[in-house]
Amino acid sequence: MERANELAAAIESSVEALTAVLDRARLAQTPMVPPAQLRVLSIVAGNRHTNMSRLAEALDVVPSSASRLCDRLEATGLLRRVADPRDRREVRLLLTPAARRLLADLRDRRRQALGEVLDRMPPAARADLLKALQSFGEAANAAEADGSLRSA
Image 1 (cartoon, rainbow, N blue to C red):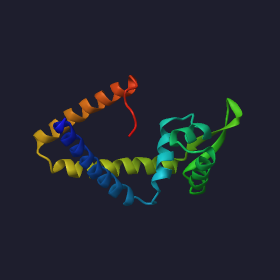
Image 2: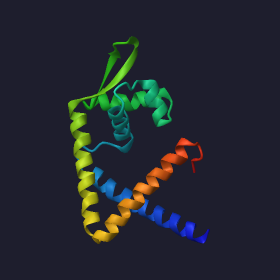
Image 3: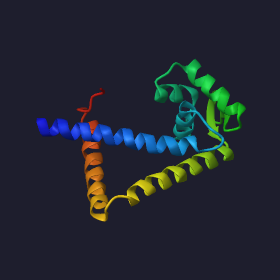
């Protein structure tokens, strides 16, 4: 069990370092978009049928909080609300071209920042990291699929 605790501590430390690298990339972006608003944009980008209810559920917030986030994004020209053609009572959330550019730019900045860190690693360590991350992802997906993954 001692080895598992050491590994968990190393992963936690690595996640903190990874978060710092990704945050630096986000903070260098203009316009600066707060993390909660970026999360909204990412959710909407991942599902073209996102409405306010689905967004609130994905964010784990009440619909009024999700609506206020959307108000801010709409005011900055990053999000549009349109009537859903299948049900006019529903409002669908759509990214604007500016939001798509912003997300693409952020993805590029993050990958560049990660690449700079990875370039500092020896090639064999990078190959080991890739294998380990793939294995970790498979294990996490299997645990989520069978319901054994629990929140902290």
